[in-house]
Amino acid sequence: MSLTPELQQKIEATQALLRDIGQSYPPVAFANSFGAEDMVLTDLICKHTPNIEIFTLDTGRLPAETYTLMQETLQRYGQRIVPYFPEHQPVEQYLREQGPNGFYESVELRKRCCYIRKVEPLKRALQGKKAWITGLRREQAPTRTDLSVKEWDEGNGLQKFNPLIDWSHQDVWDYIHHFEVPYNALHDQHYPSIGCAPCTRAISVGEDIRAGRWWWENPESKECGLHVKKIAVPA
Image 1 (cartoon, rainbow, N blue to C red):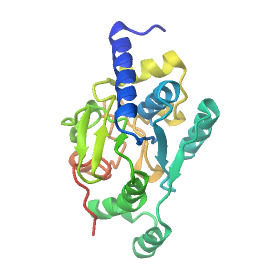
Image 2: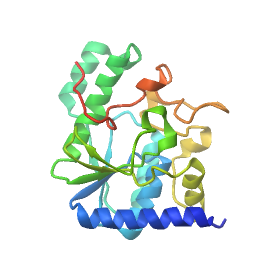
Image 3: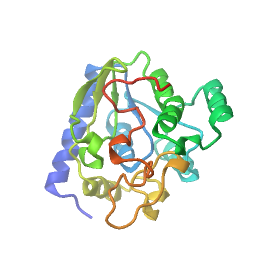
Image 4: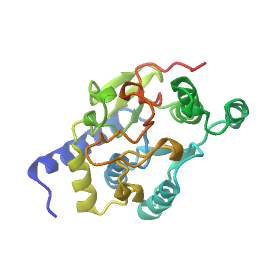
């Protein structure tokens, strides 16, 4: 398939932005959760801006398909992806007090689990960095409509960039198919958004693309704490 002129312009603009970020904010890192958007950015960074570090947050509860993609990504690009795991003591305490799936019981318990497994490791990943990069897009969720390409991350005290903020779902997949970028096999099973295995399900035709994430909650609460203006530690 050939790329549309509009998508080609977006690709060139994203490449230019990534080069500028890499030059203006060293050291800078990209948070890769191995979703479709993140694979687009992984492809662009590995090809054009290898000075940008790539890291991933391994929560310990990711789907098997995500680990398969991690391995394929390492083999494809030959660029080291730095993993960050949650600290074992708060994980163990949470399991003792709430059990392995206590996050289904309330938004507060779910956010506590997300803080332990994702937010705290993110803080460690961003230590010493001047900026970080995400694969967020505005059309993904109601909680993301007011995001911009560049914003100050108050919770982590550094600049945050969302290079794909104006890309459409179709743009992402046209890029993946055109450049034969590896992607998570769960996408072919109607999983448009993929996180931890117990917090992600397939969606039905007509459902919102984020409907499969924390599906037992209201859309307004469907963030894990990584992408809020200021991070608070859940009680």
